[in-house]
Image 1 (cartoon, rainbow, N blue to C red):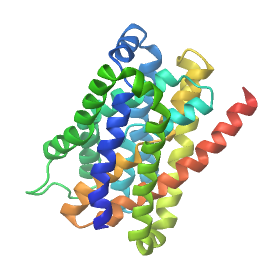
Image 2 (image 1 turned 30 degrees about the vertical axis):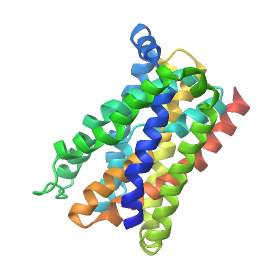
Image 3 (image 1 turned 45 degrees about the horizontal axis):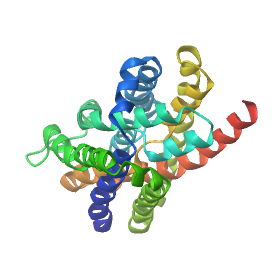
Length: 286
């Protein structure tokens, strides 16, 4: 697991740098001018997803440490994979990028808040002399916010080159996530097999439930079918690398890293499979 704890922060920072190169100030002004679809996606991800995750934890009687791992993935923002899948689904890619970017930026506040609060309710002691909500937020600021800002600055000065290489940047980001995911499976294979039944069940249930909820909430409140597809995928495809980073920061302190990180590994596999099925269904019926 030492390999994962070392590569996760680097991979996450590089992925956030890549995300930053896909953004301009205009992306943020569009959200301000037309906030409706964005707010629907924001509510689905930041409010409904953690609530549904917590409800499933209670319903499925998930062990406490695994439960915190589930809440970490539920608190994580969407990742670059959600932008790719949205494009394949003929969804609103601009909305997907805006949701991923802005929720990623505010995740330095929302992720520690959701994770620490759920851990408190679940009576799992994460807070010690060496770990705090503020400490996690500061670490996230340097591996999430700073790289995004640097990426936007690079885009500002080298716009034509970045646009030309945008597909390559996206592919690199996906490869980095896959490397982290395989690192977990290789180093924690025995424990993953041990926890696979409980972690796999709740990961699959959460993923499918949230894509359905996101799709139909968006059907009622969002603008159209392209926005429905986008919001459903944003609810189902989380930034697994960020979730791994949070798990390694918490687990390395309290000695329960495997329990925290296994749900992330399970969800990482599940979300690719279920999202492909979702793509097939929506393309066939729209």
